Amino acid sequence: MAKGKAGKVRASHILIDKHSQALALISKIAEGEDFRNVAKAHSTCPSRKKGGDLGWFTKGQMVPEFERAAYALSVGAMTRDPVKTKFGYHIIKRTG
Image 1 (cartoon, rainbow, N blue to C red):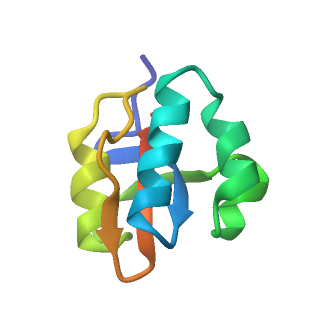
Image 2: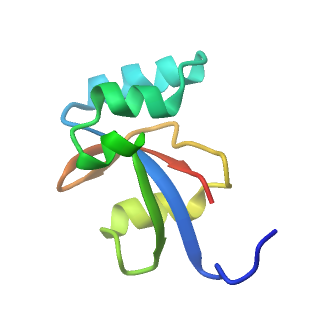
Image 3: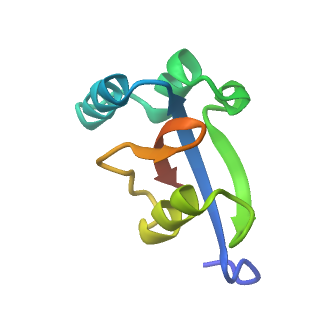
């Protein structure tokens, strides 16, 4: 595994206004839908153009709720419950 990324996380997300909609999208992805495609189709964040990719970030760069959830995930894992922030509900997938 590449060194030099200590303390950094790479994540993608899908941002949604409603909790119920976020839960429905989590189910779709769990049933095999591609995270990137769901992000492109449903996310309200400009990152949707990149399939939800937010790139690499370190602690202190994201809102606390989002950061805690992203750092708690294993690489390749996705949140099973929507993460609420002041922006809405996030489905977060750790990609690095």
